[in-house]
Image (cartoon, rainbow, N blue to C red; front, side, top):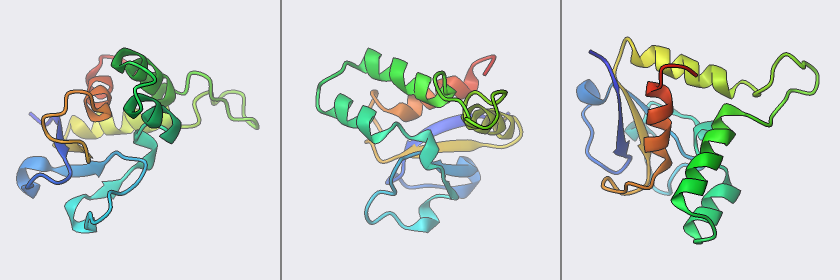
Length: 133
């Protein structure tokens, strides 16, 4: 059954096993060739401000996790010209990825080390695997 998995963008890849490879970082890592991912979705990465706060030790992993989820779900974002749209489309992107993962393998990529447990790609995977979005 198709699923969602996570990997470091620098790990060796197999297009048959990885399926759709999504680079989920705000910036493309320096020296990362385009052939190593299928699509770059900068909006899936944490904001620069949030990432700097975490990497700088100013917030805990739990706080980072909470704020990253809030960023992705657009809890405070509203589209000024259309009050019916409350999350600037991010929730729609997450729903699309969840649907894609139901029919094909999806691999979320980041430049954190493979064994890094405190990486947003794991949070993103959990969000996509949740029952509701």
